[in-house]
Amino acid sequence: MTSSFAPFVEVRALGASHMHGLRAHASLEDPFDVIVIGSGAAGAVAAETFVRAGLRTLLLEEGARLKADAANAAVDTDAITAFAGNDTQGWNQQGWPWTTRNLGGGTVFYGGASFRYTEFDFDPSERIRVDGMPTKWPIGADDLAPFYKEMESRLCVDHAAFTSESAAAPGSLSLPAEHLWRGALQLDLSPRPTPVAVDRALCNRCSLCISTQCTRGAKRDVVSTMLGPLADAPNLMLLTGVKAVALTQETRNRAHAVQCMDAGTGRTHSFRAHRFVLACSAIQTAALLLRSVTPYAPGGLGNDHDVVGRGLCMKLSEYSQGIVNVDRHQIDAHPVGYRGPFSTVCVLDHYLDGHCPNGVGGLIYEAKHDDWRSLQVDGLVLRVETILADHPSLGNRVRLSSSKDPWGLPRIMIDYTADSRDLARLAYMVERSADWLKAAGARDIRHEASNFTMGSTHLHGTCRAGNDPRTSVVNRDGRLHSLENVYVADGSYMPYPGGLNPTLTIQANALRIARLIAQEATGHAVALRTLQTVATRGDLL
Image 1 (tube, one colour):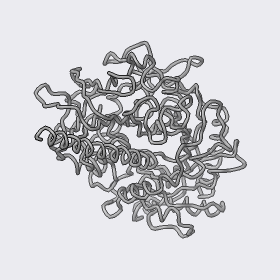
Image 2 (image 1 turned 60 degrees about the vertical axis):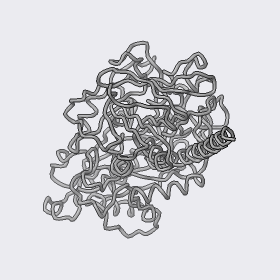
Image 3 (image 1 turned 180 degrees about the horizontal axis):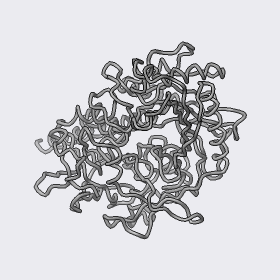
Image 4 (image 1 turned 60 degrees about the horizontal axis):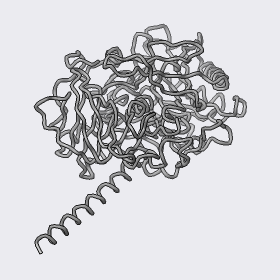
């Protein structure tokens, strides 16, 4: 449990709307128009949409607001782990069921990679077939296009540069990326600048820009971009340090409240609302629904067909690194050097690759180290990561254990077995990563496993979207098939995980879903006020 006195916790409120924990003296009036659970990439986008639409909004975040110098490692050390593994190979107690546990979620520490998904990612069914689990999304790239564009504008993502076909290296490249760019051209690949959520007008290239917070607001995390500007809004209540335990029902087709617990003191409270939006990651959202056992939903909300938690995808990945003979003076004299955005070049030439098993490869991009210590070597370090989508599987799922966590709740189980086909694809992509490094002049090439089966920052698919309630949990607009007022807006929605960093797609889809909810909610509110006015006038007559 996060202590209110943990050294990384910022005790000052973000604004007048923000409170940490469940305080006995605080006014906790309800019902709210909307309760959003989770303040990360999806939750912040949804909450901002509702607040700006004039809806009375409660945003719940289990983690704390962080001090500006808080380290990713310290926050992770304070988080509760899960069981990870499977019944055949056994279970490790150090599974990772989070992105990061804090206000703003993983966007506070991420590198900002912001790709649009391809047409293939929305419908991979010609190449990726899974029994009992359709991989085609109920929406397509065209449905998200305007929301992609809007989010890219908000986050300062240069999509035009990414889609440019110019072979000329842009000035935004790091020194390692300049070598990688030339190496890609030697292999007849098409290098592109990595699209990142970084305002370059504010960026002073102070660090490696990964696993650290940005104090200048250049890296467009959701706290500085969305939640901070709303922190004094009178129709927003932001509660950090408060865990959503379960949703409750009074009638079959609706949820009526969320049971919450102060993560530090154990104090409990229930908040009522007209609508609930779940955005706490594909693992935590599924666990919340599974804990939400009611007389109308004995297997958990939305779980009539035992689909909640199934289809967990975490993407496969591996790092590759080599050394180029470059003098230290050249590194120090370069205007960027190692610093700036964590990735500045990528290649997608192997995304669909007939030589790769199943014909589906993945992304390779520059991936800088988290700190400087790994770079204190003779020569220039080139480091890349390959990422590829895993096959959805009914057997890969989020489950609840019979053992309890420190809050007295069932421990989360990450039941995941890597598909042999995916491991073969990963091996192929690691070979392509080595080819790229060699073409860039690197020597001493080595590889580093990401240990993705223990948990990942890329989480998808446990509340899959689709048209058939027997194989999906939510419809195309994120609403649970079995409930009128509960929605999923995070990566849980994704029936196929895609082979790119998912944050921008999660945010664009969350914006689409939240806009639909806000339109319905504000229209309902206007109609209700009209009826009340008519009734009042009738009484007067």
